Image (cartoon, rainbow, N blue to C red; front, side, top):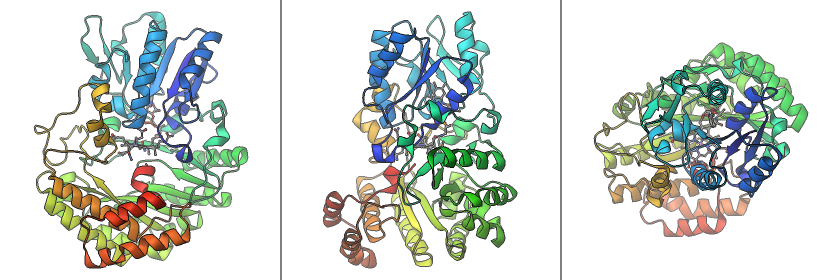
Length: 488
Ligand code: B12
């Protein structure tokens, strides 16, 4: 019996289909005995694993690990599992071990790391374990050999999710619990129609995982999956989790035509330059097909920094899309990465005035302010910091308060980021969030929205952000949704 464990990653109201373990379940389905245990549903995952072990001997524990809270639960569960089932191999996959394979192996409870996409690797690994074969010929893994040396086999080229079977949603213990009420609809599902991203932005962890490639399923398959989800779970909305939903205009137009009859409302992540190339007809078709909001990585208002990031975008294009998208009725959600290591204070101030400019052009635009937190990058990290910065060496160190806060982008505590600049960025973010509460917040009553807006109006109009204690207090009491924390 193989157990696919998805440790807790989020709060119950943000719970969504655990796509990583569903994708793996899809290739095991019918061939292998496996069960999914999801910490987002299951209050006691270890008890569930014990129950499964009582019914059938365990062969492998496969754990999906994202940096942050999921890693924290993964560590605790794997330690306990190792103590109870010392002979059962533990395999980690997902973004954390793919980005930091050595750190993952520097633990007593990770035997093999599967880097990047797992659908082909997992069955190969299972086969090699059963036959007692050497793992050396399995692409995309990292492990300790019999001398304790770390072996990293070559990367495995990524494939389209369309090459693999459909996700076995029915294998989740309570599938309906993953259908959420959001600003998009009363019954929102999630879907991932591609893998990877063809851009190589130097701040983004996806490049190391997908090697600067993207493979997408066909619009026909996306539409078929959504039709199935609507039939089974009565969905009326969907969040597309793809890193980059829009690559080819022809595909976008085809998808719009295929899903329009489902009358879904949806959110996705896209590229600004790609959308600027789309015709008005395609943009109108996307809107008619239910596109409500598009998350767009703007990252910076400085052309110099955009070049340094290798974003392949200009500040002019960002302003252009902010303006153009209004006429289609789609809301842009712009995300910024602030804190260039070479000039953090100047970067922060310029970015702030650029964000205000966007708001003037398109008041409905939503803004997400992220501190730059570096991730390992094959082309060198943004800000030329490869020699100035060292990542933790073990999962435990990653889970310590200093690095946990780094991972979840709350307090990166970076050597090049002066405290006063960090405080300025955080203060600006609070003023921005209060002045323009997100429409994604369906729990915030109208009066609370009005309170936040009124309290912050003077600060926003005068550009006085420092020490926003009253707004912090209001946020504590009224608890508005913070897309930076609660969305992807
Ligand atoms: C959905 C999502 C979330 C959801 C998770 C919801 C859920 N179901 O639990 C939520 C909103 C909670 C979330 C939060 C965060 N996220 Co997130 N999230 C994503 C997102 C958009 C999609 C992940 C996904 O479902 N992919 C689809 C599946 C099929 O792919 P996959 O997960 O990669 O799994 C495949 C492989 O990795 C591998 N694999 C995975 N697990 C395993 C296990 C085994 C045993 C094997 C063999 C293989 C394997 O095989 C799978 C199939 O091919 C990604 C970006 C992206 N598009 O990938 C960011 C992403 C993973 N998140 C990221 C981050 C940083 C976070 C946060 C830390 C941010 C924050 N605001 O604090 C938090 C921390 C959450 C936590 N650790 O618990 C980063 C990680 C990289 C990095 N910079 O470190 C990403 C890449 C976004 C980005 N571009 O920066 N996230």
